[in-house]
Length: 221
Image (cartoon, rainbow, N blue to C red; front, top):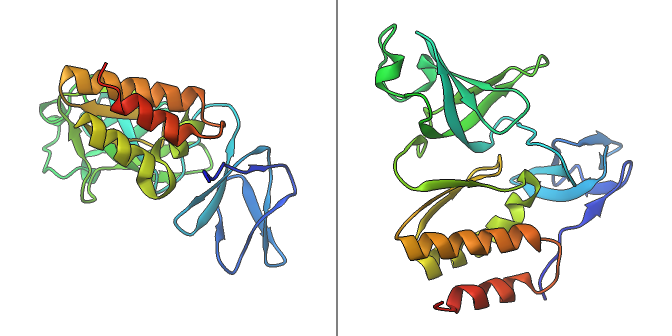
């Protein structure tokens, strides 16, 4: 039977502090983890997060995101990450040696990048990094956007849903936790992957979704 996301309400116990650490939208008290808001329970690594049922992307350190360069200065890039505030990518946080004033040689306006949230401070300043393995500029392909709350459903339990989409479409797909998804492949594959992802977004809270998505993907039309 397909497991459905569970909804939490404020002050509801959502986990045991011995097994998990409190993430966004939660707090710990007396060895238990409680929800601070209405949303979906999302267990990621050792953290429990409560994802709002609606709203914009809420960045936290460790999130892997897809960003778009929207401004360039001599020492950093301003990056649109689909959040209320732009993020900053400093020359010290990229995998290249960038001389002062040469930032535009490496990343230009409207370039897409795969990056990670390094820091979010109390003033909502967001710092990115591209220095970790697997983070890079995204060349080619196309980017679609979905509601950030639907990202866990697109990925699926242990990555099963996104793996199925890749298998049947032959596309390379990267899912950012900020609701942006990069898809690269032949025209038919990209179109089919996009249809599947849009269907998941629209029907995320319904039963039997995995079966319906597989049927869509197997259909050659």
